[in-house]
Length: 295
Image (tube, rainbow, N blue to C red; front, side):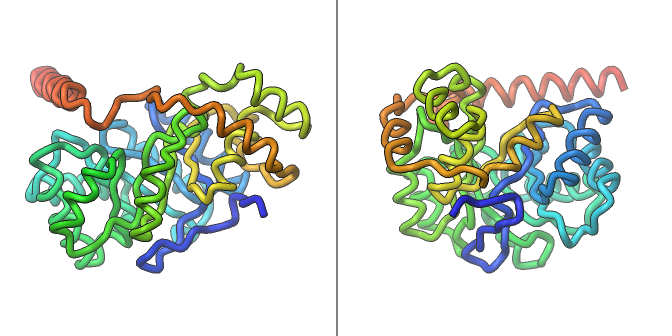
């Protein structure tokens, strides 16, 4: 059966996360964030995913309050950025995130990227936050198998979820098998491959066959694989479309055709690309220096 915005995945610690959420990446203006979040809430969304590096946690918090639903109905997730990793740094960064969102607790907190030499200490701090009840669940993002193996060797708490780039071009089959072995949920960011699949003739034909939109076909493919999806959109029509995936169902022939689209290539950064992480931290430090000089 195809999942809807009302269906939830039960994480290994007992928390429940909606299968379909709204990613709030590269949204910075408050009016657009508020518009997207309120539109999503009206369409039935209850999962909202942000991150410290998106520089919009404050705006997300304001938008959530404008949505008119109780906090208990919502599932709010955020992530710690590379430059904030480390034990003490993580504790401080988490408090800043709560303050920005104007929340007393977070539903899910993730390590954004597996920064070598840092993520073990970061995880210890997150375990403390979880033990103290400041966050209901902790997990990771962009971790490959070898990162997870290293973390699991020292972890007292298993990550409940790993959010990674996943789409028909990069289905992450081997990683999915690893996650299943340890009961770790699989969540997909960039589930539409940053739009690169919108003109794919195979998916276009499948969409035409079912009278559906291309993005709806791709998102249903994810849900049929029991993957939590976090598509990003500020367009009202797209937000509504992405919430209505149960009026058709892909068949075995469709799934076979989609499986042949795999290339194994990322449209975002490869988590093993250390140069990316170092560059991102340098950019962040430069932005902070500029902000201090201007402030």
